[in-house]
Image (tube, rainbow, N blue to C red; front, side, top):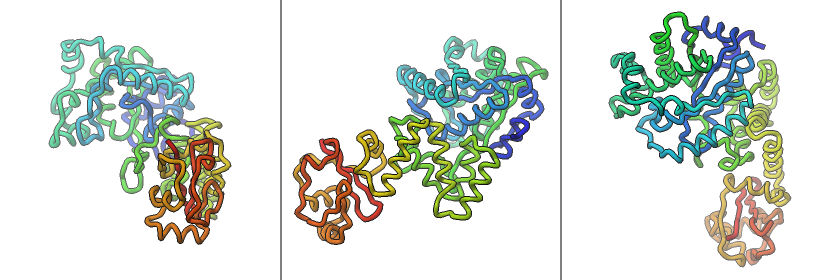
Length: 416
């Protein structure tokens, strides 16, 4: 095991920048708090947040007190960092609902030891005059304009609202430093400007004798530089109601070889020795996707616990073996967001018509060819006749039909 948090972050390839390594190591020795902010822009966190969630757990392993700020105040404005356009402002009720959902999610993932803080507690009691006198006067405009997260938006448009965001985040760090014994702020590399605003502000308020420091991580991106965690169907959420454990598991299982080693280091608690052993085994038989399987198992277990992992594995195995018709109703429900789905309005429909309507085949001619070849199965049964008709009793749990074309192309048919 690494001797300190810096060594741990370095071998994992996570560490991007540190404002002051000496202060960080002293904060570790004194078991100070470490915080990361999460703005409540949605009712669930997504895969892109996992690196920061895991980061808080890594710091906790080295004696730090993990603190998660849910930005009830800053979330009403929106951070311009990494954004090309102004965020849509959310109403009070939406933000409150999102805060409640995300707070519950964070405590489940990090554990009861995480301290949940809402920055609305101090920001919403502050008047505009107070803010300008106590915070604004300590920030020079030229200093702010030099920050990358602001400079990159000046030409395309940046409102004063988002321009002021870095001041609010700096004040957050100050509040945590003086009231919550928190010496370290963490974030992605796009947060460097906001983090250094905080350390600079604390220096101006307290003086040189302070322990405030910041740490940024390399952003989790795909090989082509695009954001990790986005698919054609949208974000991969941590809430099982938005992204099923099966879909979540498959997202990681389907990662490219070139991505898997980095993801094992960034998103799991596996040791360096464990990861090297996995990579060695994977290289011997890449077709078995050993590294991807270990990655999918580790991350799904962390997010969805043992029950969610088991469910994902059962459904994945059924897909691989062509035995989806043997799944339970709950297991079938996992597939609704993962397979092409078509809803029929009538129970009485010839198989050939259904194949065309559900776009399983492009024409009746193609459908006949697949049927003649025995390449169409319904609920695991091979169908050869084009006159075979779907009836109500064919639907599993009165809800689903599972049609497979060829060896791997599955379609889910539901009824109204």
